[in-house]
Amino acid sequence: MSVSVEINHKELKQMLSKVWQTKLSLNITGTVGIGKSVAVREYSEQLTIEENCEFIAWNEVDKDTKDKVMKNPKGKLVYLDIRLSQFDSTDLKGIPKIDADIILEWLIQNWLYCLTNPDVKAVIFFDEMNLAPPSVQASAYQIINDRCMGDVKLGDNVIIVSAGNSLEDKANVYDMAKPLCNRFIHATLLPPDVDDWGNWANKHGVDHRIIAYLQMKPDELFAFSPDSPENAFPTPRSWAKFVSPLIDGIDHNNKLFQKLVASAVGTGVAVTFTSWLRLQDTIDFNAILKNPKEIKKIDRIDMQFSLVAIICEWLKKNHNKQGCDTLIDMLEQLAPEFAILVLKNAVENYLTDLRKHFGTNSKWKKHMSQEYAKYLKD
Image 1 (cartoon, rainbow, N blue to C red):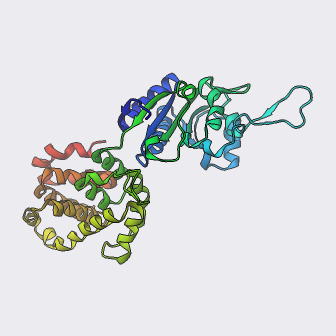
Image 2 (image 1 turned 180 degrees about the vertical axis):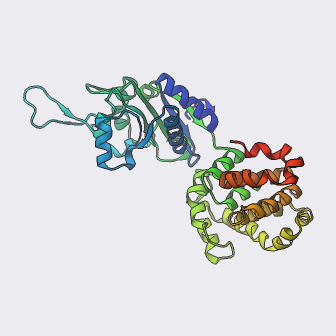
Image 3 (image 1 turned 120 degrees about the vertical axis):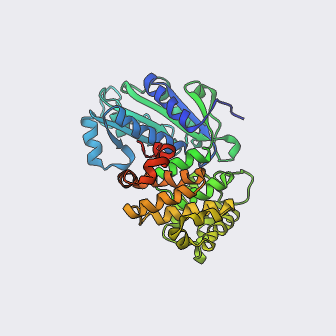
């Protein structure tokens, strides 16, 4: 069982900042689907703001863009997602130059050539590193520790980060050899808690029904067992990347809805999620719109979470002046913890309208702004 210091997502970004400052190499271990890759990508994108650079995702741009970056990387930050499991042990070193005379020369891969430019700024991300067999991992020793490959040297503003699943998760991974371990600093990333994930999910357009449900059922954000016979199980990744787009535009009463959810997070969770959504059908939202004090009659916690999802859906088409006034009336009747959930969703999607219209509402200005105004700040 491998052991390293445990960190949360916020601490990971702080650690990545120190890695950028020191140019050390970091290895991140963690269970499946908790956002290791997303965290490194998002840190790299944030770094472009700090460094005043243009973000270049090397794996996603065309050949012309790559050629331009190789010729002149100034003002760019290159992010490279390298999967060593797709390499042979000799691939990093390159191939011999066929027309060489007496001195043997090597033709290296274009991304490695790009990283030798002294003006380049880059993040090399060896994702799923421990899926690669030991012989391939060993080929990365030199680039990780000595910051060179053969006779080519990385630029001074290049960092190396790797990530992999835990051995205990039965993910068909290889243990990292101790000499390679000693070329990294190490951290184990913990699954995100539901509040942190909810904030992230709001910012990234995850379906509000999922966010509200997981606030009520936080244990179902991540429920993975390597011994489970189910192929589908809930993780932060499966909720955001699979369930959210699958249910987009589909009503929970549609017969296909539950099967779509089950295909991504498993049958048991799909049944619970769908059943909870059907509680919305028992709430007379039109009556609430006419008289927000009707909210006080909803005393079941699960139905209050369901109401949050209804309000978030209603806001999609009603974030004008009249809608914002009605929203304030509803926020006044909601318990603070539920009002905050609604506001967080609204702020991420309609901040400009909220600032404009809330500022003219007398009820908001007189007493509610003291409690909730901080959510309208940048």
